[in-house]
Image 1 (tube, helix red, strand yellow):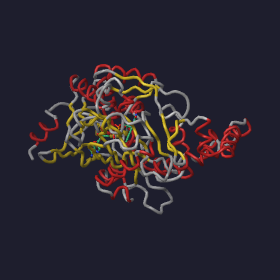
Image 2 (cartoon, rainbow, N blue to C red):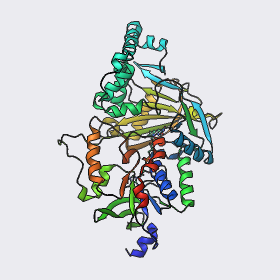
Image 3 (tube, protein in one colour):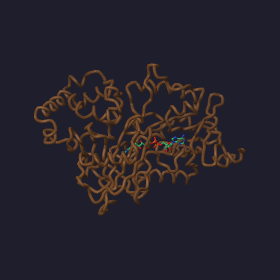
Image 4 (cartoon, protein in one colour):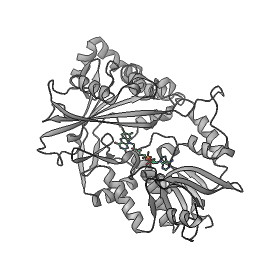
Length: 456
Ligand SMILES: Cc1cc2nc3c(=O)[nH]c(=O)nc-3n(C[C@H](O)[C@H](O)[C@H](O)COP(=O)(O)OP(=O)(O)OC[C@H]3O[C@@H](n4cnc5c(N)ncnc54)[C@H](O)[C@@H]3O)c2cc1C
């Protein structure tokens, strides 16, 4: 392929070398905005046909839905909330609701946090006393003054008491992340108990009327207007180096592969991918090297189109009960009540989690949809609801697992990748963190002043 074709396709056009951002998800777009603010030329590359990454919206049954309803918490970092509201306001407005949460616990659909009657019905008077005593003990000053927790289990016990943790968090972690909280880092508990998923008190949810993807489409529109190039359907396949720096990015689109000289790279893809693209940087620690691999879980989403309303009006019901395979059920009507007021049908979304090598991953789309439908009554949905249609979406490696010891693996990866002074990592996968959109909006500010000052 001639140099002119390459330059036309990726936008080199004889200008200064750009900073290339890999991924047009929230983190990549936020980083691109920060670079533009500093007057740096930016090219964003994404293999997907649309922007938004995991926060994109998809068209189903004539309406836009998120990959599992996505919302913003009004209690997030004020700077993130301000910037997000500015984008969402321009992208069709926001619906504000107070989260109604449910749970399936010991086979019963209950409110969450469960009230005293729910607790009594689930575990009986003796069990209720044990839970209460355990919670109280966790709050005693003597317990609180102990050593800093190492595992998520220790952190959760310190906050909620051992009995609550064994009842709810142990099955939740096993289902969601494939391991118990004893195998998870305390950092996971910090995220779980932070503002994103507060387990007590009212939580205000901000949901874009036109789906969360509209927010990121609006940001992409603004970036393009300011001169950024955002090339979709263009997957990065390799990086080249020269004198210890990243010198070029190779990407493939529908017409073939091309290579673009770069000033720097901001990446929102998982570090193992970067290590593969940079042969000199080595490989992630081998199994047996004493470090766990960086693990991520897959999400399988089953959207169900149901006649009428469904009796279960919680925003989400978390199935702590391991006898159910569904992990979480969301009712899109609850998230966008104005948008769906008077709608003759309801869309529910059942989320399953797996590691890609279990029976959930092996089920066909129709088998997974049948499983979701069969478990609806246990999740509090009226028996006999009529499911008219379904859609199954698979999201491989969408949930980074913060395993115990993952910090050491990340330190090892940092050491290899930080050797390249013009390579930065951002976002949920780039930093292997259990991040939400609010973290992505701050990510652009975290790319490091040195990237803004690199010579063109
Ligand atoms: C089911 C589910 C529900 C969620 N709910 C919420 C919620 O309610 N609120 C919230 O704040 N957050 C939620 N999140 C988290 C939120 O989706 C993520 O935090 C956010 O999308 C992460 O942004 P990111 O840019 O770091 O990564 P991503 O959104 O994953 O973007 C990464 C991008 O990189 C691209 N890419 C990958 N490989 C390549 C390659 N080789 N070349 C070019 N491009 C590539 C991908 O196509 C993708 O567009 C949820 C996540 C899931 C899975």
